[in-house]
Amino acid sequence: MKKLTDSFVYLGHWPSAGSFGFNTDILATNPINLSVVLGVLIFFGKGVLNDLLDNRKQRILNTIRNSEELREGAIEQLENARARLRKVEMEADQFRVNGYSEIEREKLNLINSTYKTLQQLENYKKETIHFEQQRAINQVRQRVFQQALQGAIGTLNSCLSNELHLRTINANIGMFGTMKEITD
Image (cartoon, rainbow, N blue to C red; front, side):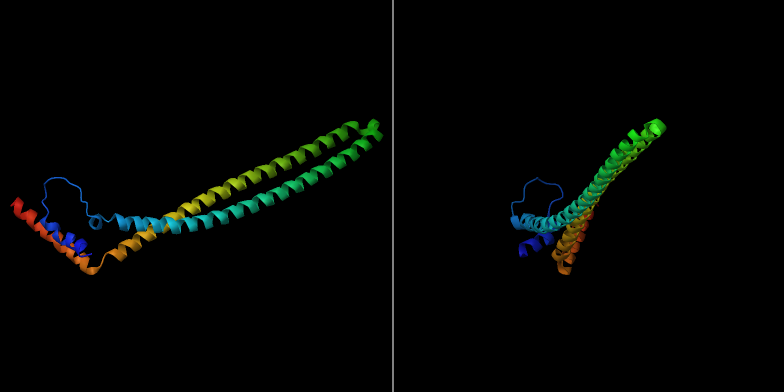
């Protein structure tokens, strides 16, 4: 830890133009801390993400079940309509002379209205599923972003102490003073 804080103190002694090299000091380059933070973010984010996805999946499945129930109701209505159609056809044979054209018109209207109802229910089901999927994706994105941001802010706040902050400011002031002396 002392080595890490000393690296901030000696910032003023680094040459402003010099050779380029790699810093092989693991504690100074901080990959361990970054890997721990990323590991924690991934570990906890995955659990929240799984919970959100499971909840969203249940809602979508419930919506699908409701749509299927509505579809089954429509199919039942269709069967009832077909039963009525058979009844109307039997009556049509009896009243063929008087109202054959009226019966045919009723039959077509009944089939068309039932078909339209089924189409509307199917369209509603598709739109509901699409809407719920988009809403789930947006909520998951928002949650993951919030958690990553909160983790990064927490990491930054826990890493900077007042003493370290003051040392960094003093080192930067010294470096600017040296640069000013060189330019004068």
